Amino acid sequence: MTDTHPAIRVSEIFGPTIQGEGVLIGLPTVFVRTGGCDYRCSWCDSLHAVDRQFRHEWEMMSSDAVWQNVVALSGGRPLMVSLSGGNPAIQPFGALIKRGHDEGYRFALETQGSVVREWFAELDVLVLSPKPPSSEMRADWATIEACFQAAQDKPQVVLKLVVFDENDYAFAKEAAARFPRLPVYLQPGNHTPPHPGNENAPVDVDGIMKRMEWLVDSVTRDRWFEARVLPQLHVMLWGNKRGV
Ligand code: SF4
Image 1 (tube, helix red, strand yellow):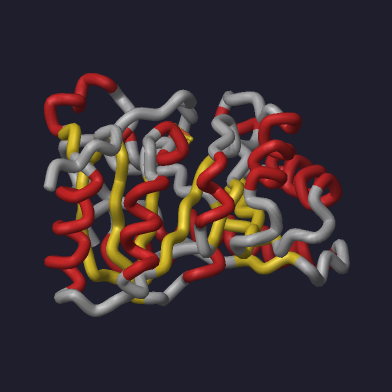
Image 2 (tube, protein in one colour):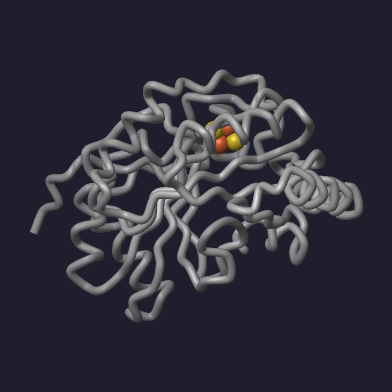
């Protein structure tokens, strides 16, 4: 049967591995990383899925083809599928999510909240990750709010904020105040993100851990007891290596 659904621009599909950050940390997951992003954060750790100079590595794939990859990697055993990027909200994922749900798989998507999709309501987990001042991007709160509304209270929706400095910390507090019902995950930023094409470039784990300690101190000092502070586990384990 021909797959008539729009094609998905894929950078890489890999796993199973564990989710390295946020609300699903530690959970076995297959990743579908899409190609292309409407942002260009100063510290982006996925430039190979953002910068158009890597578009020769990206592939337009049918929902069927993406699905067959997920099934092959998971051995046909349902698990969590993480839709990441780039900005995965740009891609047409509705058909893939429906197909996967029919087979017992679950779907999580993380986005900066710049593109609204009706199919957000079909997800199991929606991670809204507004980008803080250090990214040099500007958060569009009205569109982030529209993403939240599109989810219609169906998936679990959480906020994830990357924090590098005091300004980012203040931004995270503002985000939490705008969405008081949402669980908040804070993550110390990685100031040594991967150089695309050199996955062996060193990571300053000590520096990231210092930022983590500062973040823990800030949260406890401020009695911000609703926030959870987590490092990027995959960076601790594998540095900048891709496909893990
Ligand atoms: S939104 Fe995410 S993928 Fe896009 S440039 Fe920023 S960090 Fe990179």
